[in-house]
Image 1: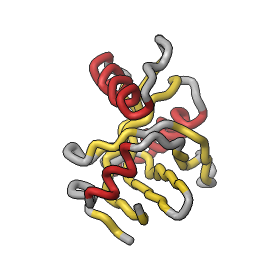
Image 2: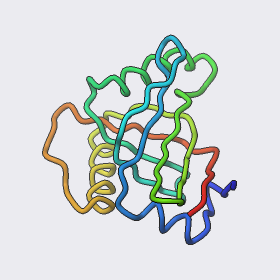
Image 3: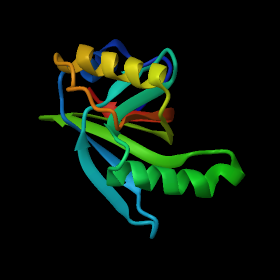
Length: 140
């Protein structure tokens, strides 16, 4: 079932505010999918999902490699985040870029702390993967 990225149903949005481990799928340089567990925050007002990570992680390297390849075409890496609980599931898709500026990282950490109920330990190598969303689907 499709959902409006910017105007999700109350049930869909509530599901994204519950505490769930999610998956992130990024493209490897050879085009195969790389799937890892992550924490995700969804900001429908801005049309964004965010994932915090270490700048040296494989998922970040995948996005940076795809971002470099896509820059000539004006977009980031095509990625998807997904979560499920029983028969409920939700997927968000879009183009990801890596943000390293302090304000973006601090905002993403605060959003993560709100959703997951804990503040991550300080990490000078932390970055945020910012996903500009263009597709939402699921049953929540």
